[in-house]
Amino acid sequence: MDNLSKQKDFNFNEKEGLKNIKSIIFDFDGTLHNTIKIYYPAFTSGVKILREYGFAKDFNLNEKNVSKFLGEKPNFAYDLIAKGSDKNLKEKVMQHVGRKMDENMKNGIGELYDDSIKILDKLSKNYDLYILSNCRESYLDLALKVYGIKKYFNKCFAAETFGFIPKDEILKKERHYIKEKIIFVGDRHHDMEAARKNNIKSIFCSYGFGSQEEGKNADYKINSISEILNIL
Image 1 (cartoon, rainbow, N blue to C red):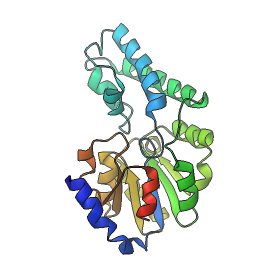
Image 2 (cartoon, one colour):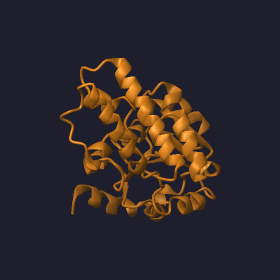
Image 3 (cartoon, rainbow, N blue to C red):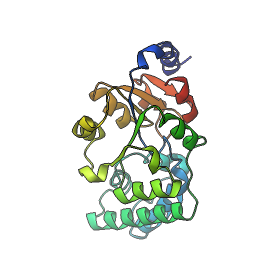
Image 4 (tube, rainbow, N blue to C red):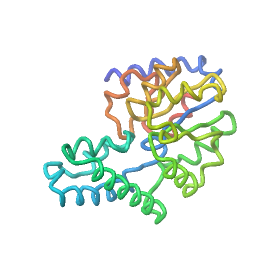
C-alpha cells in the first residue's frame, strides 16, 4: 500500500473532525472538469503554429504530456516547449488555444467528470461552494454557463482576475468572504499548497491531471468526485 493510500485510510477515521466544515473550495480543471477533451485538440493546433515558426519540434505531442500543463498558468506550457520564441508569438498561440478551447466547449466536446453535477447539487444543500481556478475569467464564465453549474457556487475565482498570482495568495486575499471552516479540493500541487499555506484541510483528486507525488501531503485522497461523500 502506498503512503497516500495509508494516509487516506487513517484520515477517513477522523471524519468526526470535519463536522465543522462550512465551505468547500474546488479547483475546476481536473477536479470537476475533464478538460483534456477540449484542451488536447486545441493545444495540438497551437503546437502546429509553433512548429511553423521552428519551435516545439522536439515536443512529444500526446495526451499524457499535454495533460501535465492543465491546471498551470496559461504561459507555463509555451515557456517550456517554445524556449527562445518571442513574447508576441507565445501570446498569439495562447490566444489561439484559448479560442479553440472555448469553441470546443460550446460545440459540446467538453464534459464534467461523472456525477459532478449530482455531487455539487447534494453538497450545495449543506455547504457553501466555491471555485478557485488558474484560468481566464471568460473561460470560467463560459464553463459555468455551458455546464449549467453556476447556481451551485457562492462565488468563483479565476486567477486572471488577480493577475495570475499563486492560488494560496488569492485565498488569503479572499478568505474573509468565505465561511469557516474550509476544505480545499484539487488535483495539482498548487491546490495542495494553497490549503497548506492557509492552514486548511485538503482533498487530492487522484483521477485528475496531477501526479500522485503532488498529492502526497494531502489530508485525504479520492479516486472519483463521488468519493467526496465518504469524507464530508
